[in-house]
Image (cartoon, rainbow, N blue to C red):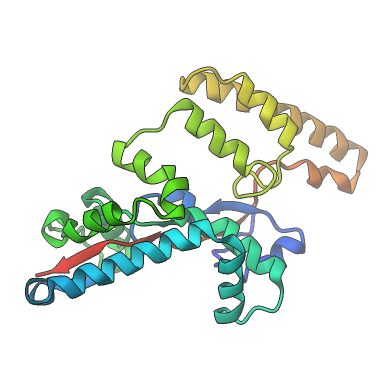
Length: 255
C-alpha cells in the first residue's frame, strides 16, 4: 500500500481522483494543542488586562467559526486563496470540531511526546508549570451566551473526560455521509446500526461494526471475483493518509 501525509486542502484533488482517507490527524490527536496563545510570565504579570482581552478575543473567534459556517468558508477562500467554494466547504467541515478553546496538562504532555521523534529524548517537565488557565476560564464565563458556546457540547464533554452514549451516537449520525471518518458511508445503514447500540459496551460496538464491515467485505470480494471496477466503491472507510493539526487555544505561560 502506498500512502502519504497530506494537509487540507491539498488533499482534495487526490480524493476526487479516487484516493481514500485512512486517518485524519484531528481525530487521532483530540485534546492535543497544536496551536495555543503564548505569553511570557512577565507579560502576564505586568499586563493581565491585555492578556485577558487577548484570550477572550481568541475564544470568541473560535466560537464564531463554529457557529458561522458560510462566513468561515468565505474567510477560508479569501485568506487561503481558494477559488472553489466546494473545497473550502470540505475543509471547514473537516476541521470545524478542532476549533475548540480547551487546554489541559495531559494534552500538553501528549503534544510534547510527539516531538520525541525530533528531540530523540522524552520530555522532562510538568506541563502544569507552563499553563495559566485563569484567563481561559474567565473567557468561557464571559462568553457563555455566544452562539458557538451554546452549540458546543464538546467542551463540556472534554472537561468531564467522558461522553454519553447519546452524545457519541448523535455525533456519528451528524457525520454520516458528510464528515470524516464517515463521509463515505451509507447514512441509512449507519442509522440502523446506531439503533442497535444500546450501551457503551466495546464488545457490542465491535460486533455491530464488525458485522457491517464483514458484509461489505463479502460484497467487495464477490465483485472482485467478477472483475467489476465498482468493487472499490463499496469501501466504507477512508484509504490515503491525510493529517491536520487540531486547534486548541487558551493562554499558556512561559517561565
